[in-house]
Image (cartoon, rainbow, N blue to C red; front, side, top):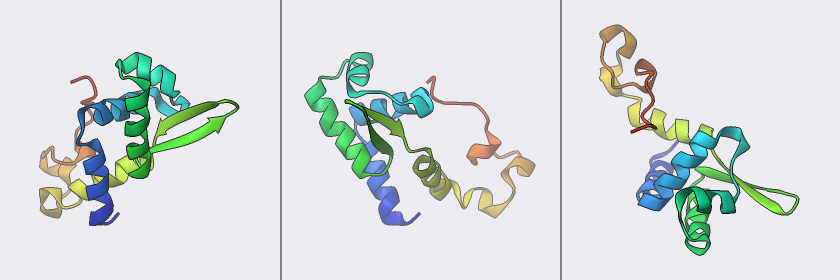
Length: 116
């Protein structure tokens, strides 16, 4: 992943509604959610939600799939993980984080922060 793509991804997440949408899609898993389900779950008007979903899709953090008459949105886990890897690739000065007891690497901390 290059710096430009990371900036694009982080910029897309740098809005409260988009961050909430993305986190909800991460929790939804591979099933994804329809825009109406997202709007209801998050209390976001449909017109505003479509704008935010477009931004997340444009950043590559969310995918869109049409199934019959419905659109389904899903978190793009590969892209999410690539951003996390980019941000942490040089943590612990290149040492094995698990061995040093340092918790800067996501792999070294198995607790989820989605509940916070």
